[in-house]
Image 1 (cartoon, rainbow, N blue to C red):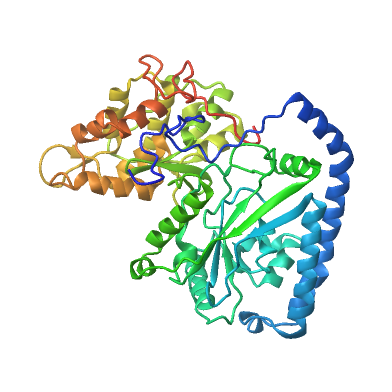
Image 2: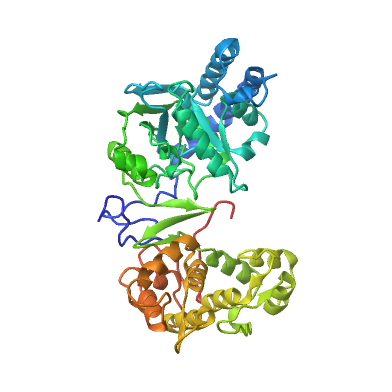
Length: 517
């Protein structure tokens, strides 16, 4: 098994065994009674003053950021800024930024190793990305250029700082945006030292520092040398981690500002120069750099990543959500007092029937508009805002728990399998297969389609028979465990990994508490 492969790691287990990588998406902060008293005192005295002064300094940054780009056209901003603007504004922003973090309690930034020049390494990659305090790494890197969401331009002060930085902006709503970002990164990285270095957080989101998330290939597409940068917070109590589930923004900010002193270690590793194979394959390049950084940090390199707004992990050949949206749907329906088993779905096998939100409400006998909108949003909608009623039928059957796994997988097959153009019987093609796995396991559709293609390679057809589908979902040594973990009918309970969420009386699964619950 390759380094960082989850193997038979139970995906829902928040406390895996010693041979399994820890869950990088969860951060629990346990405070002793003495620590609680200390934080109450310091939080009442120290934190308000620090946060107030830090916000004042943050707004003082705006004039310097604005001055650097004031009066420049978009064409002029396509080239690196030089002259007095660069000298005065760069120095002002750098000094005030250090003061900002100092006021928040980061009294020391300890630097190890030597930062490479822009000619030696046009790209810097920093990890682990664990908190919104991580931009502190820009200070010892002399404020390199960054990649940020275009939506951040509208945030007060932050938008001005991004313009000052001449940041590379990506829009999640524009499919062509990512291509333009790749081209811009390649243009700057291959400018021969004309542009400052570009800094990436290749994990793309925050974890708890227990393991490295899968690196996204954006920093490695240009195929130029990169310098890995390690970020550590060697403090007695980890108040900085801001994971998918754990303390929120305000609590992390307040607890960190209540610490008498916070220390940050920034370590520059030797420049990583890609091989010809890595230059041609950004994913291979990213994976190899991830392993180098994980080894230096002494933590696992995993395949865990975020797809959309959900964290996913790799189990065998499949990506699955840490918590499928099916669980959240069950919570919404239970709160509305709906028992899925009482709904007469009447979905026609192998034939889609698109329904509107109003028809959805009538079918499920829901009257509260907020509940209807919340439940309806869990299903994929077409361009007209309609959903396939087969999706609803399968989700309700899974939440009802009145069927065992064999019956549930048979129902899934019957709903989405299609008649063959030639020959008897029905087959489950990639669209139906990906829909089933997306609904039941939270698997991203592209990952499910890839797995379907691999399963079909074992036979002459491009579809799966009922027997093949049930062999995969019930009897596969690895993937079968997923179905029994995510879908444990109450009438015939299956063994589940230790630490996984308990099944409810109606067969649905109680998802662990999320932020904001």
